[in-house]
Length: 249
Image (cartoon, rainbow, N blue to C red; front, side, top):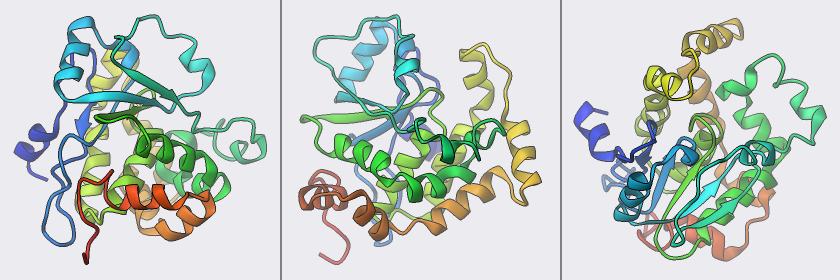
């Protein structure tokens, strides 16, 4: 995607550095995903009062928080009364057998765990998707800490559900990677992207390659069945809460 297109999708909010609209990506039929429906971002606890006004002006009325309970407990800032917050722990750390293969070795910071997580714990992503689809009227913003991987899984599902093009979905994920320096600065950490890419290379791929493999391997029908999404959620997913027609209609 050209730089101008990325800027059009950027959500400019004081306190966020990795926020954007999932609208504006080309679908298989040449139409674009609609703006103002779903947004992705980094940790909203960094949003200033002025930033929340910007969130409101963007039409967002619900935040779906994908973080672990222990992460949410560290939040310090109040949120405006007009905002609905829905908490969904996407990780599921109680499944220690699964995470033994991904946590301590750092693979949790790569797309190498995306498909295994969806296959092992589809109900986790299913709960997040359902929360997003059944949120009150208005735009829905979903986030984790850095807005990279947990957020990336959910964005991948939402975009795939409306047949967004492969290159657009990949570019959306890689935008977070390109923002590595500013993301690191916002959390007083070093940019870990080069180390994460090296980790992927030790497993025979790259940061981009790992995500492309996850995207190519995502069987949306199998995920929906495994997550046991009800019919109303399936319709809402295929139509982005009634804002578009499914392809072929």
